[in-house]
Length: 37
Image: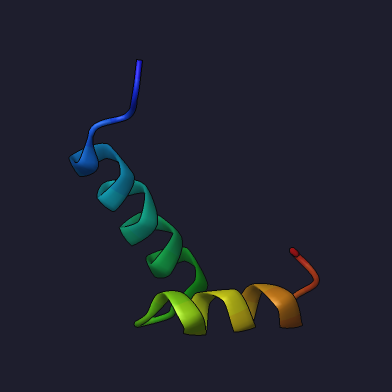
């Protein structure tokens, strides 16, 4: 069973909100800076 595209997009949007980021790249950079990844 695969997650639906809606579910994946919703999950990504939630991550962006939590990291206060506008793009996926910005989210990755903020997570790296915070030591999350």
